[in-house]
Length: 217
Image (cartoon, rainbow, N blue to C red; front, side, top):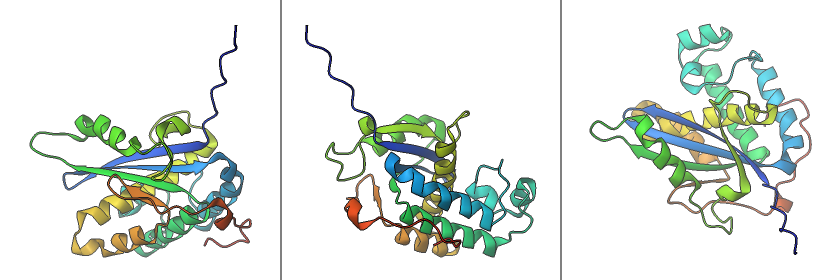
């Protein structure tokens, strides 16, 4: 009897976050190749150290841009300008690792709720060509949601990025005059695709980067 072929290991760790604002729901999936995680960990640690973010706080975009939310999280040292600086540095780290972003959103209609769209959003976000031209397909990803308990240390740190990038995408999508900053941040993301957009990916040889020297990019 011929042995069963080995199941190929999944190459990407993928962490997602769903958020709702102004009747828009967004799902952002942040993927990192497992071979990039050793380089990612110092950058993600440095991000927390630079802004004195409590180790137990899982970065939350809405709370970060709310004075009361920052107070509850123990981030009294940050004001709105500091929160914007953290977003800017987080986008730099996202690009430096590099992470791949898959972004899908749906406007809520009638009596729809965010919960009722969850399955649709995940299906759309993970529906990519198997050749990887629009990000890794689901079969090549270990997928978790940032809100899940008992995440691995790497998934927790990617969850920080996923949560913050999801908030940036949602605010940018809202298109309000006060959201210009977030629209500018979305334009800085290098390796991403919307559900209807071709991803901007580069060969691995072009993205190698040394360990951090003490400053966030």
